[in-house]
Image (cartoon, rainbow, N blue to C red):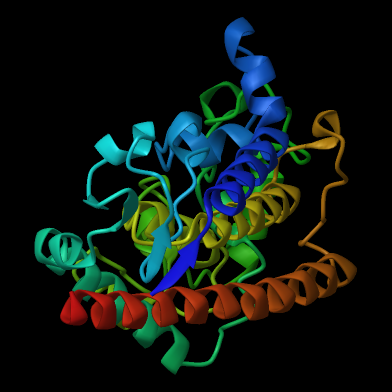
Length: 292
């Protein structure tokens, strides 16, 4: 058990909150006016993890917070008071969240066991507007780069092989049968692979779903990567995202395909590193729970 003095853990908590504030400044600034942002809002609306909870710093398993028993975090779920100190109650957390831990462990392990699949070119976003008019698409405030007919032609000219259920389920009805796979929630562990952009963003989801048993530094790293991946996701989409301050990637061209795939490979490496950190943390959690 590592023991952090109060000045150390309060400093780390403050640093984490400041980092989250910086990462979410745009989202928080637009929210009072109801201004939508298809990149940054996605991470908050789709994953539904409040910024206030993201700002909370958790040390993870095997860490004792000195002189923390009088702190408000003493009332947080799955924390245990030990004299004047405070720590994660690993045994109680594992008992309460065993099914989630088992699922996440299995999914991450399976994802990392197979090679990344590259060459999807972000066509899942195209399949989400396939057959629709401009006023029917999800982000109607942003113009499409191509006409609906040209978008449909791009879809027809490519093989769509989306392996991620939570992307696939947003395909238009006409686009669903064009996918070479039929991912389901039940087959998620069999289909997910490290090259998938959405699987990379989901590392953030698994981190916060396992809070407070995941160190907040890891959760913030996963959140930051998810934001970068979402930017690529929208750059490669049929939307004109220049209004967001980024240049579209024309994946319908050879140059665009090359640019997208290079970025996708980099994100696959980075998301795999985060998966390994999360798996290592779950191993430490199990050990800590066993020794409690």
